[in-house]
Length: 93
Image (tube, rainbow, N blue to C red; front, side, top):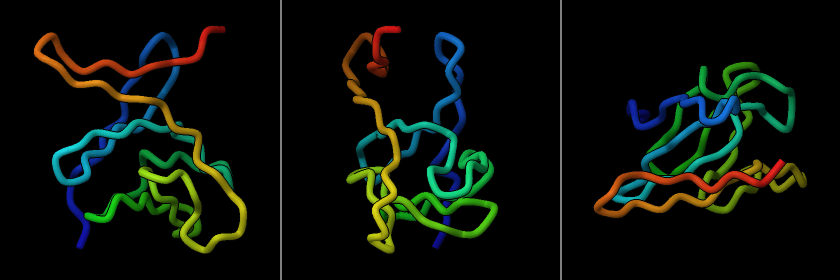
């Protein structure tokens, strides 16, 4: 059920999770919006759900919503893949 399809990266001082779902890449914050745990220590399934290592709470990296529909949202970042590489859009500080 779970694969090693998620990695933690640091870009411009920000820790991010990058998750591969089928043939697409998605990026999100590493902090669980439910309990604050490091999601990069959790696991991602083939449907794109990241499971928090603290409580097992799950968030879908594609939609950003928690899988229990309780109103928690995962902060996501746009990803572009082209011949030059993989690019993640971060907000201007």
